[in-house]
Image (cartoon, rainbow, N blue to C red):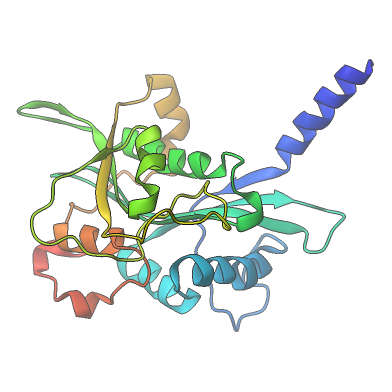
Amino acid sequence: MTDKELWQLEDELHELKEVLLNDVALQDPDVDDAYAISGLGEVIDEQLSELLLEEFGADLKNFRRAQQDFNLKLSLLVEQRPDEDPALDLLGFLAYKTWGPPVPGVSVGAVGVADKHRGKGYGRQLMKVAEDRAAMLGVLTQQGFQPGEVRLRSLASAVRFYERIGYERLEEEGVAEKTPACPDPERPADAEDSEEEGPCVPMARKCPPHSPRTTMKMGPLLSPKQTAWCPTISRALEDGPTWPTMEQLLLPESCNA
């Protein structure tokens, strides 16, 4: 093999080290060997915990409770490093909830990329997880086909990132608030703010359906039965960590998670 072919093969092998883990359920931290994948517990208890605290001022206890209360989904993007310690390195994560009608799609609760891995496209890769799910949630209504959409609340400083990848600003009634919301996962941690962070910006992206072949391949990733969209829960989740408890939301019976 030529040097060029060897370099190409090395690049391909390196790409295989990056693994997307979907539907990760946070386990009791006091239980030994709670995770089937070796090293995953350390990734969650140390690396994810640190990223949540630094990026959102949140903690795993709140995340674990929100996952149980609202069926919050968690995807982890990790790099396998078999000859190093730790053997798994967290690249980034995505927390989201899927919805059925009347507003089918995905609420993004949080997305984050570790400081040292920003600027490498991992943020876009994680957002595509949400978009792929939303694309499978479109429904046929009396008015025609209603595509699934991804909804989130962006930090003011992150709006340009989400606009670049196809998201649009939404009009919102009432006074805009500043919440933990979604940062720019590609922005260097040491980048200086040009202005003080303003209120969060609601944004959404409509996701057209996949081809039938792609839908068949991705179908097992999604439950055939989805919770009916609830504006109270979706707004609470999209505000980002830390999330309220079910009791704090005082939900009507029609908005069970």
